[in-house]
Image (cartoon, rainbow, N blue to C red; front, side):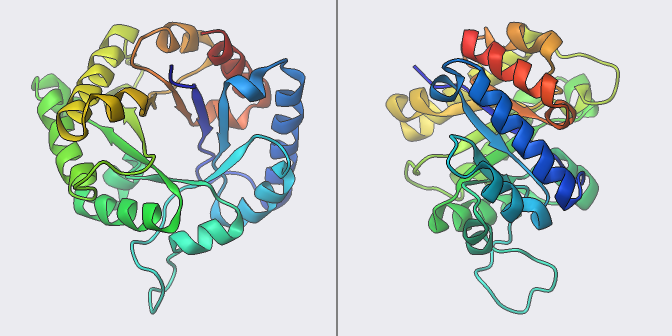
Length: 257
């Protein structure tokens, strides 16, 4: 049985004081959800500058903290970059890599994602590796080909042998902020395909225990149907993670799933 994982991604939102308040409210609300802390893993994904504050705020709770990206380099003359070791030192347990916004807006490629994933894992962080396809790919009927290609270059190139824990997040880019909704069945199809590719590469046992999150605008209104799917193990939550009541409701739904 895979334990659900609900991860917030605050993106470029919240100043330090706002991040502290948000983290405190989530921690307090989680404590009031009977049994949730023992049954659902929860992550908060603040901006870099707020990460130490958020880690300090949730210290002593079951909540983990995720960085939103990291450099593949350990240290050196890389102005503006943040290493995996720096994230870990600041209190991070996980790091989000290859998010669709970085791929689409900043031109980040699969080989960069692979290098970052290897660096993060070597440093003791759990990579959350994002995969997904735009509307042009889906319209062309090439979704599975695209996802398989991303897995080959973003995951399998980084880890020739079964790695320690990694998390995968599927982002249907075509259904994020477009007014088009991915059905639970469409999401399940891709999640099942991802797990099958993991089985083929790393073995059935490793794939069976690995978590695959849905990153396509999960909200309280669609979380129950999505989390009821056999291969959807949680969510990478964007906008709803900035609204405490919505985020806690998704956690409650995950607990009941």
